[in-house]
Figure 1 (cartoon, rainbow over the protein chains, first blue to last red):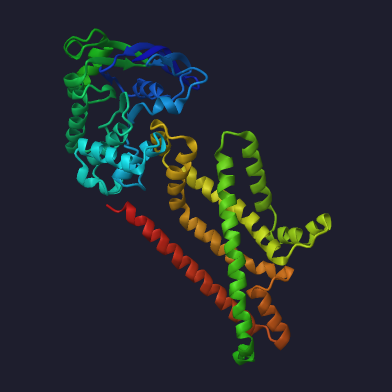
Figure 2 (figure 1 turned 120 degrees about the vertical axis):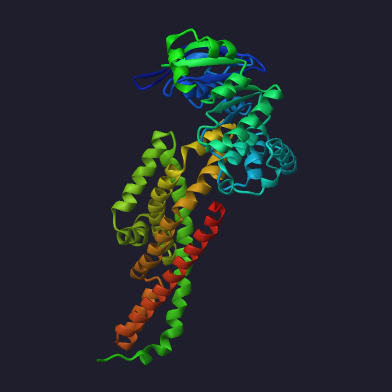
Length: 240
Length: 221
């Protein structure tokens, strides 16, 4: 579904991603873990071109999205993204947040968009909050609306950029539960996370990144029980 | 002390008529300034060196020279080139609208840059094209942040509007001067229009507070 070949990203002189090659299959759940500054988020943001790769190629469903004449908007509408800071539109209600892109990008009628919007809000358990503004919601609720907003576009794949890192501890579970529900529907997901238990439980594959490269990848039970590299052992000893 | 407000009683309707003429051209100028300012602000943040250069040059010229000079140029100097006399009303609106556009563009540019970059990222990630993103997501949030600064600009514009008396436009100030010349007294007509300006600005700031308060409601938890 996604193929990444020799992906490199530099910010000025700073090499953030160094020659990354990997692929993500349909229905697969990939958790990316690693120390901060390892390039996890940058890698994720390259997948929907929020960051432009310095070199290397990315294919999505067979089309090269890093090519010159690519319709970026057309690609992005099939890739849902959930941010650490939620990034909900503060001047819109929960329902307006989830219906905006379907109306503008997919040109759905207001009725169709609202129908779909109510369905996705129900999916994240926030039907009764559809008229609330983001400022009236808790952190966990905001993130669930953000997930619903991405789902409303019916994407092929969902990217999560540390979705629980900005949450109070007691709200982490409600967001992870919604994400687990998504896994059960067979959604393809790439999750940058510090929630090791979640990664171990739901991921099909772990990518361990450090200093801009994928140091290690494998099934969670193998990675967590028997990490191959010193860097991974060192990291796990600090976080587990 | 020689002070007698009864001397202007007969002229009060004449002076009050100036409220309408002043408000009329100030409100049209504000609209022009807002539209022009928004366009210029978008040029300034666009990825286009020519548009950026034009917008910055425009702002530099209109902020870097006196408004009175701009008014005089538009009213007296341009007819010399074109051969047509511009009506005072048109000159006044042009000078104030073009001038205000420069100031408003800086306010709006700052407002746009102050919107959380995450907002743009969220819109882009959903596949929303640039134009609707600007209109529906960025500008509404920018306007909310800059409302106090915008009201301030409108207040300045309302007061500075007295400059148009110099080209003979029958605004509040000009009417006060005509009354002065008629009754040979300065204090009473000037104090009277001063009071009217103050009331107008007072109402404008109250309206600003009200709009701000309404907008804040959506922020409350």
